[in-house]
Amino acid sequence: MKKVEAIIRPSKLKAVQLGLKEADIPCLTVVPVKGTGLQKSYSERYRGTEQSMILQSRVMITCVISDNNLEKCIKVIQDNASEGQVGDGKIFIYQVEDAIRLRTGTRGDEAIM
Image 1 (spheres, helix red, strand yellow):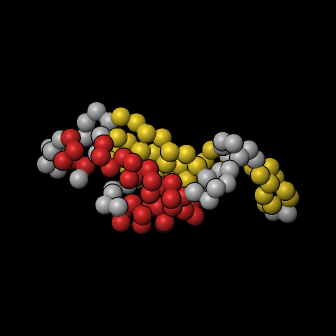
Image 2: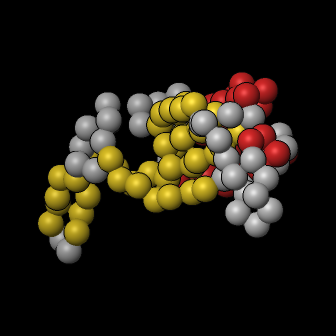
């Protein structure tokens, strides 16, 4: 099993969510996040004064998927979240040891389906 974390623009969340659902990867967790990467700072007007903002608002999508769905998941996220610009986001992939469904006690790949 793999854990896929994608940090994307908030405006791309709906497209990614629909793409994952169409690819039979309907389970995901979404968390609002702030951070900075290659896209350094930007200016924003607040109460009439211009302020330099360092942290960008993004959303982090987390999916735990079976190994055979990994490439499909990555492709869906890339196709739906990328604008070809700095600040589009990142995808991180982690190995997952085990998963357990609390209700039934089911373990492994069966717990995430």
